[in-house]
Length: 144
Image (tube, rainbow, N blue to C red; front, side, top):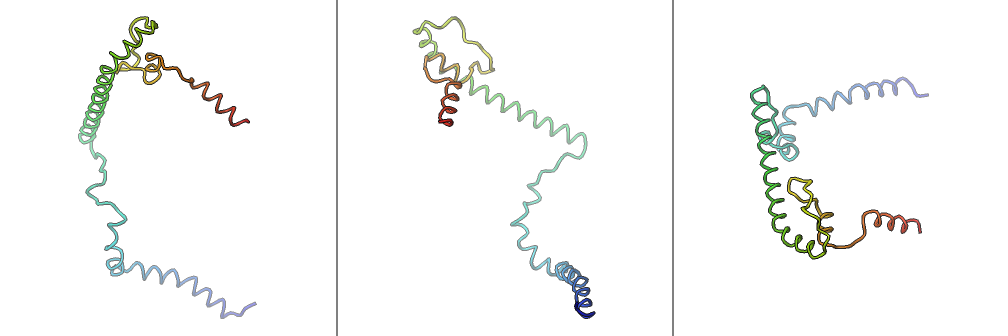
C-alpha cells in the first residue's frame, strides 16, 4: 500500500481539480473572449424563435390566424382537385362510355370528387395487378 502522501495527493486532486476548472471556465472574461464570438453559430437569433402567446387575447389571435391558414390551404387543395377533375372528366367519361361499364355517375367520396388512382384505373380500363396480387408475388419471391 502507498503511504499517506499518496492519499493526500489524491484528496487534493479530487477536491481542487473541479474547483480549478470551475474558476477557469466560469471567468466572465474567458466567456467574453471565447464563447460570445461563436455563440451565434450554435444558437438561432432570438428574434426568429417562436414565442408562445402569454394571455388569452394573444391565444385567441394566434388560434384565429392558424384557422385562417388552415382554411386557405384547404381551399387551395380543393381548387387544385377541382381543376384536375374537370380536366380529367371528359377523357375518363369517354373511355367509360366506350367500355360499356359506366353505370351512372361516379361516386363522390372525396371533396374533390375523385377517388384517387384506383378509381382512375377503373375508369380508364387499365388492367394491372391488384395490391393483393403484388403482395402475394412479393412474398413468394421471398420464400423461394
